[in-house]
Length: 141
Image 1 (tube, rainbow, N blue to C red):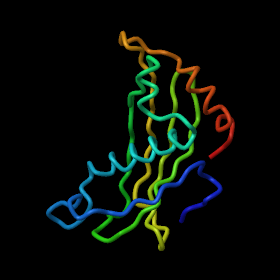
Image 2 (image 1 turned 120 degrees about the vertical axis):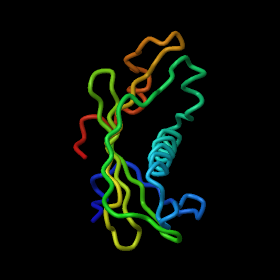
Image 3 (image 1 turned 135 degrees about the vertical axis):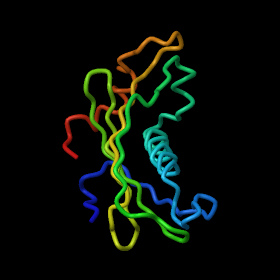
């Protein structure tokens, strides 16, 4: 069940029929899109449009992702995609969970590590981005 107090951001997303596989459930790769869409909506809410980061010379990229699938979503399902974030050195760690709206069943749990690259390909600590998200660091999810 979803504990609202744990998360910094929640986004409601409806399953679309074209996201289903031949078994009538959401294809496993589609969850990566849901998770990414949620991260982008979160930073946009914080006044950081994703495209502005690259124009400022920072390119946030996924360094690592672990994902556990618990129960499938099907046509007509609506989900709540939620996250909380922490920082470890140059890494931004997004803890993301997707729940079925209504039942509160855990659908997917993921940990996504993001690093910021410079245009030249070097890793940047992402201090500018961290300053914009500082109010979230140090809070336990």
